[in-house]
Length: 380
Image 1 (cartoon, rainbow, N blue to C red):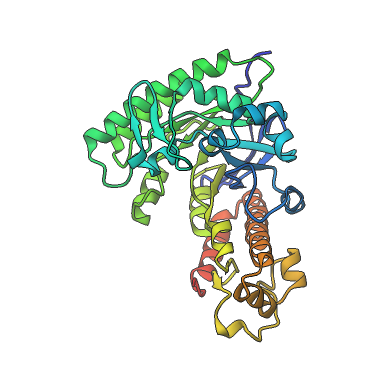
Image 2: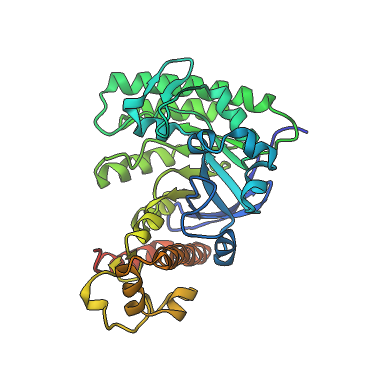
């Protein structure tokens, strides 16, 4: 059985901008795009059950190779039937290669052309990952989408260092594809290559050309949302995405607030993920149409209305702001559970509205209207 290459079907392209709807065909079901992927680093979305995720309507979640490799380890996951058998989640899994974690733990790692040597943040033990071993790990996880190992560089990196990182990433992509093609034929997950090049247009162009030539099933735009100003993010998102082929699904890693999501969809991005919606939820921050609100504030102590009157999730239907504030102030576990459920349901409902607007060729108007209201809210 050959590996899948053509996994994306375009449904509709908005006539007023580059936004589009489509379907990514994966082993554990179709993913209808644009789609937000909740982050389940350790094969679980914090404070959520798999049934919660299914109830909201998610078709794909993200897990992390770096963390799962360290704990519980590939043997446990492989013997349990991959991530799906291990976690019980029957939807799709996208697994990050661990490249970003290696980037964020820079004091604990050393990158060479062969791979990356790093110390575990758990017990300090030393490990070495290569593009090939990362492919093998993700195949063992039975990931529906797996990412190549890459080198991510932060905002402000000088051109020479950015170019060196890009050269390594490009070489690793070629090695990853070879390993993916040679993996067990039973494994039908798709490999995505990653565009890097930091914030230099010449390096980005060079990376895009090599990624297109490599012809992996999907393409991710890396190296964004790494500390750059918002206007720089939007500039490089647009200039990069416009050069990518229409027949491949496009993924931007690490974005998950309404404003960033709308910017990505406007530029033709299909999937994205971020920890912020769930992390912020655990800190008592709820999405609403009028901006994010901090439930700990005194003003909500006797507010018996829902978090968002236009949200149809069970949290907004069944619980008041006053009660949710009480849970948060009392440090109850249920606070994290309900806030996380709401934030993810809010984003999922927003994605449904986005799809409908694209189908009607009115996404640009939807985006403007949503942001006008959302940006004028509390955001605290």
